[in-house]
Length: 388
Ligand code: FPP
Ligand code: MG
Ligand code: MG
Image 1 (tube, rainbow, N blue to C red):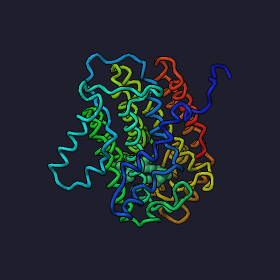
Image 2: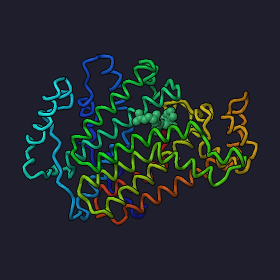
Image 3: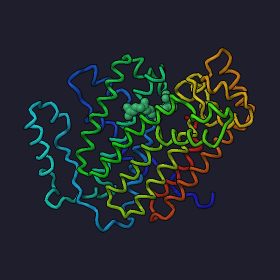
Image 4: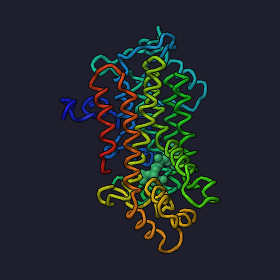
């Protein structure tokens, strides 16, 4: 293939960091309550695809030799010597404050406030921690999502709610967010804190838009309109692409990259995230449960009209009433599935995902040549071809 590179696996570019990821996160998650401990760590295990941390690490390396901003503020190392657990076990607030202060001053490079990049990997400790934070937030959102969706399976195993019950699954998700917030605060970077905190709000907004399902205008017009697709794409950004885009942006911010590089990192994540979710939505129609590791055809059952159904609606107006009543009447799900399969809905969704994937590739085209940049480009192809 012209232009193909010697390596084939983006994972191999940041293999060392990815190997430690799960263990590092588990170290941030310990609780003295055994039940909470297991529930919080349940989705932090090797079966995950770890797409978000992988992208953060690749982006971190890819921007390493890109132009720097001349007025970026001082950044601190992440201190490995005290885990949030050690601090939080100590319930005396004065001690909490003094041990946080110690954390910073104990840092080997705290005198200058500059962090040192790890020699062989080209990744800052703060960026490695950012990768862990993104996976913790993702795991929290999955625990809550599986309660909302009443899911029994995730990655071929019982879901968190099946294993621990709804109450523990919700609390474990909240606990993950709390620990992720502590780790985020310790990056001592206000811009990154703001970006990642916004993601948490965005995930909730996306989920609420999904509960409402379609644009308010659709109820009046009864046909698929541009507003139908605007609503769907905004929801898709909020529920999936916000985490990927804002964490890619944060990786570039932590590198002290110039503003145009930071913006390109964001655009890469936004477009790749959109492609990722659009493919997720079409796989729900094209792949079986055993291939997916979770129920296939779940979206219609949940009352959700995603890309394939919305594109099909353009040609089959009879889908309108079914979409509005969330496929709740007997036979709706089967009828809708048949109409979607007779339409070009899946193909149109795939084409849209391809457009986003091309945009992601273009966003990093101007980055300095590196294996990490090649791997980011590789991911724009992988995201389209994935089967689960
Ligand atoms: C998976 O979607 C779910 C998300 C991408 C986000 C879910 C967000 C919330 C539940 C809001 C709460 C957020 C936090 C941070 C606690 P899906 O159901 O389409 O995918 P699936 O098939 O993998 O279940
Ligand atoms: Mg779900
Ligand atoms: Mg869901």
